Length: 164
Figure: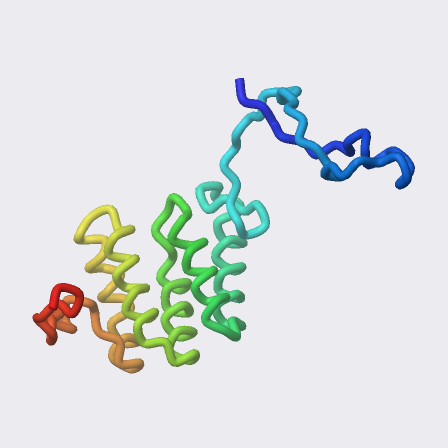
């Protein structure tokens, strides 16, 4: 059984200052949890579940509005974390708005990472290919290549400064 730490005032903190001995004002006291917590998966966008057919459109609309109005990289990446954390592959419209937002904020790497996240999230290669076909005109317009088109990363510096 786990115990929960709770701060409670020590007796010294409750005494008048003249009688108090130098001790911390608060002491740690262990307390057992009173009830077992139940776990229910919730989604970040105002409790909307994309798996629920009635809430899917509202979920998509919420993230479309988020990416259309995002003003900084932190909010862009927060939104991307939320849509890729859900148990579904994001809608094409949502991904298109996320890529537009990343290019509007001048974060080329984030635009490429959106496609990389889509590749990881897609269940089959055919699904990923259909998303890319749908997004191809936008990707060409914004100049966003897939990661594989960028080539391999080549190490320029081969010596190790720490061992020299």
